[in-house]
Length: 197
Image (cartoon, rainbow, N blue to C red; front, side, top):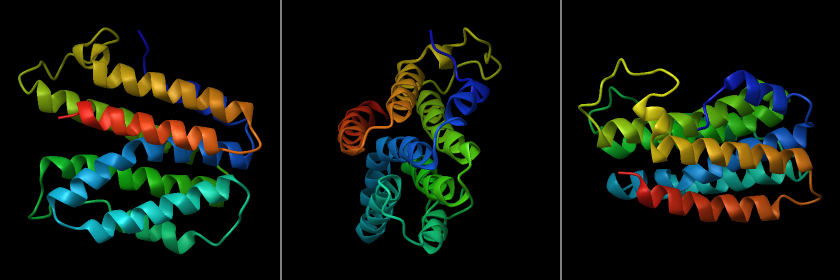
């Protein structure tokens, strides 16, 4: 059974170049993007989803070496993170928080060339899985957080952790193009989103 070890993720990312760290963060964001689309449909803000898709595409361009000034887009992605105090909070708002944050962290990974920001993009996947578990098991013991806890054993969390491992492997291989990683994470993100409540 996999566990989430932020230090281990960081240790695997630190030796990678800026492009590979950014591609890993973009892979995490790409997996979460279908959940932002779901949120945008529920709250009837399709333009916001379209805009975040463009920002995410720009992040992939950064990982491919097509440098651009993305600081404004990073800030824009951050503004798309729903606030828990907003009046219109819905279940999907929790997913949207993590999805938009992952996109923002992807761009900050590139801007700062800092592996920690890529780790924070991966953390968004883990948090989505945790959020989904508690939505399906509201009566589970919240104090059960050990290495063999129900939340860690859940299909949601194990799927997320497996995806993080695969994306780390792909980033470490540093291919000439990230197209295959982008296509795979797009497809797997849609599949994962379909099983989340």
